[in-house]
Length: 254
Image (cartoon, rainbow, N blue to C red):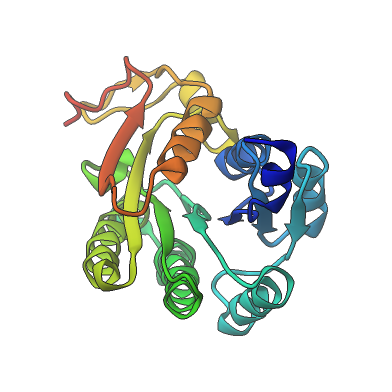
């Protein structure tokens, strides 16, 4: 491709939620290196600005994904600044308190459901609407699932329930997206090294009651997988993919 053709090539626009830390930050930066213009959202504007500092073309739009008005504002900004959205990495999530099911306060349950399920739905809904309306229509949504979308950890009822629900959200959106060139998939991640998984390197409760150290993997491998999925043409979809630290107790969990 000539320099002139490269200059005329339209920018690809990606939105990453939970972009202020962990997998969101690493993935946003990887997308930036791959030539994407990246819109970063999350609750902490200072953390989002830190992420943006290493991305050539980035736009910070801080928001709470559980708030419909704030999600609408982010998408209004995307429309006005960029005119379209080509990729959503629906990544924002929270684990909540690790405790037996009968000890989880209802407020804690609701807080996890609000972020992991309602927040994921609100952002995906807005992305779906924009991808249907834009011309050319279509785009890709990648939901951040989890190994917990398949099997639970001990003391994780709220997180596990929301990640199982994420699978239903992915399937339903994927079905509805076919008519509009919207490819929807889910990346189920196991033990990527982030602040959320640090406790695994010190020992974590297993299904048989033992406390055991679990292996983790560099989150950069998750990021490169998202970049690869994002590079696929819209007539190709990967509905579900699992990426995990090889030695983690998943296949034998329980």
